Image (cartoon, rainbow, N blue to C red; front, side, top):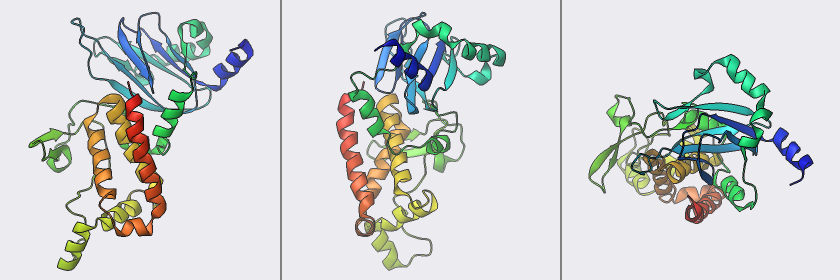
Length: 290
């Protein structure tokens, strides 16, 4: 890459400045992960759009912990700053840092240039995979589902509503807690009929869950099936990149729902064309995940 092209990409792409990285930390963005050390200062030339930044701490015994990370929608030329918090073993956000110091970092960002790695665009296959994997996920959807600045958590939720808190996995015969800060759309596949439904309607919509799917599309997704598929994608990415159970549960619920509709297939064929395409992407992309 010549210097002129590098300068253009530096100005147009986003930058993640990562300060005080500990040794032997697994750090990644999208489909790319590295073992980094104290000299590492972040990633530059990040293409505008949605990205997932994650890390995993390795114990003294060499055991790698669960991945923790956050989604962020990078605007062209945007700079975000994160600092390692050794006590919490987590990233400290800009709001928890000295604002004047953060501003100085951003104004002098080129001072960190040689210690930042460029976002890997060569070969382009991994970035193309990432774009396909997240093609329906919008910044608004991320804000709604992950209100804690896009963070994907493994901590149990602090909510007290047991109907919302607990996800029953009947196949495993146990109850699994929802993670903190995960606000996926809740729906019950067993209640797939309208209130005050007749016995005939209960039977019909229990076998064909088109009413429930249409109700969700109208009530939650503004009759835009792409937003629904975006939430399905978000659940899959949380599973694939962060080993997050809530994401897996939501993805599985959507697959079960959309595979249990007869009338909806006839009413909304475009939804099913996109849904089947998304399933093909999910199963093929999983093979290329880290």
